[in-house]
Image (cartoon, rainbow, N blue to C red; front, side, top):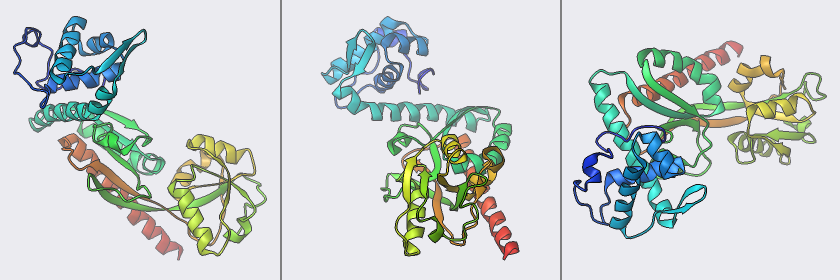
Length: 335
């Protein structure tokens, strides 16, 4: 990650500047050089990378030249606006980021096992995980790990980012396609979808999907689990597919469109329940059940989480299991 010192044991020391580091061939590049590659690419310039690392610009430039010489290729193209990775640099960048992440986590792992409550954890959370699980997890986690810097990001990333440690893991909807063995998945929760509209909407009291066939929808995206579940429910009811006029990937934008138009929206039940006072949207009491996302923890199979990272993973899992038990009891009382 940028804006951080080089991980444990990978430093731009005077010994490296003097060429006293262990020799590396093109078949095994210097790990410190690869970490530096990631730092320069993320910072956008050698000068910015040196500043972030607390090193001199000549030291960074010299280490970069040493790495390029060992590989026999140029890794960056220099320009007026900094540097851009070449095709060779881009090919190395995922591995370089993974090495940087694993080296950082190795140091943090040792320190945490020694009793220090320090380090960093980054987690990607879907809207459901943010609304329904995060409040149950984060306060207690921060109390247990007061020195850990926690970064929460949306899961708008290529899943390969998990390999690079950005983020460490994700709590999100399982994608429609089958994931390969390079990912570890831990199923947590199966959501259902609410159909929601503005107060006073002509269809606010619709009882079944057949009454919604002529309406226009606003959905997160056509590939989202909400859209897939809605299409399946229409198909199972023998109805033509829902007509989606607008897609909006931000929750606040989707809610705003539904609140100020006759568009009909759909979202996980738990998300609507946590947002209905703020959004002002009403749930349409249709009889059909619309299956939503299967929420899971996703992690790169070769990753080795720190104790803090594992603690946070387990906390999200337990929060999801507790929520499922609560929802099951609620359904029993209603029936």
